Amino acid sequence: MMRYTGLKLAVLACLVGGLAAAQSMNNISTLRATDPPEDEMPPRMRPFVDTDLREARNYPEQPPLIPHDVEGYEVSRNYNKCLSCHARAATGRSQAPMVSVTHYIDRHGQVLASVSPRRYFCNQCHVPQRPDEPMVTNTFIDIDTLLTMPRE
Ligand code: HEC
Ligand code: HEC
Image (tube, rainbow, N blue to C red):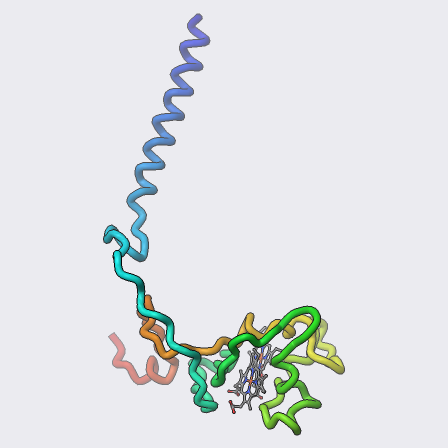
């Protein structure tokens, strides 16, 4: 009998512990904080930036942003719309900048004849832009700005 009581107490302790944990998880703040969702619809997204002008990179390794519209461009196992302009052989006709040589290098450092599988899905790294206000502000500052800031 005593053994069972002990067991029940242990189960109860676990339950109470679990509840406390669930309670404290509710205190984790979300991006929306405690505000209820707004009734009105968010503003419609504007079309892609299509200036054809290069955007400055924020750090040297940054994949360049796409300065043109990519609506409906297929990148699948069967077809890669991006490569129809950016592949080595296509650039004469398209006048698009060629994907750099890193896109032809596989993970063993071997330069291949065609774009390496790990660089095939362009949108993994390259993104177009829309001229919308960001939903979440970004506090990133680049290294040049950082170096000119007064030290604390
Ligand atoms: C019809 C041809 C064409 C297609 C298709 C195309 N591009 Fe482009 N892309 C260009 C041209 C031309 C430029 C040079 C800037 C300009 O004129 O827009 C460019 C510029 C870029 C740049 C900027 C390069 C830099 O150095 O700043 C990136 C990144 C890029 N494209 C990625 C893509 C990706 C990813 C896709 C597929 C989703 C794609 N492009 C599809 C023609 C094309
Ligand atoms: C794994 C990330 C990644 C993927 C996937 C990728 N890129 Fe890039 N891309 C980069 C980075 C990083 C750079 C800049 C440094 C470099 O050239 O490696 C770049 C540079 C470029 C440039 C500019 C080249 C130059 O000389 O100025 C073009 C154009 C480009 N990529 C197009 C593409 C296209 C088209 C695809 C799909 C076939 C693609 N990229 C896939 C990361 C990626």
